[in-house]
Length: 165
Image (cartoon, rainbow, N blue to C red; front, side):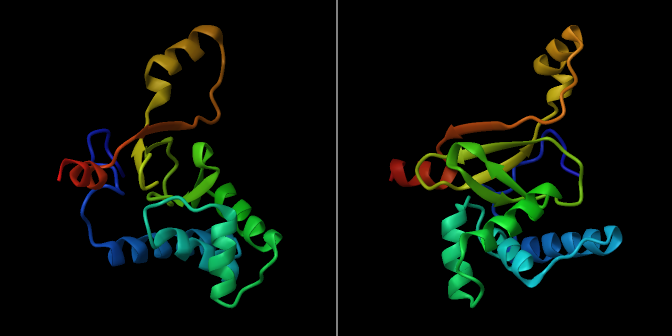
């Protein structure tokens, strides 16, 4: 479980192969436990998104699916993305109209995204919005928050280092 002070995955150095394997194993276990069908196309889309901590649009995913020998019609990518998003395995980055693999697919959480405006890399962090100012405002008005999308735009450490060089 990610704590509030944990470094967001995406900008930190980590064992990416283990990261991908752990995420796939978590998704497969949840699909098995809940009777969800992780079809070959859905699995491939998830693998493509896990390969980089960068958001990919549906058409970029479709191109990669085509290269991998899967269907080339937009509904192929959109149906897979809809399934993966519905079950919390991927998140839609509204600002980019693109998708990123969830770094905590087995957890019920409120993600916040830090998006590099230069390279489109995305780091996912935990947002405890219901406990903060937004949560207080919602409670004061009797509003029940069901879903939030928090996206911050800036420059990632790698791009910042390149600019400083």
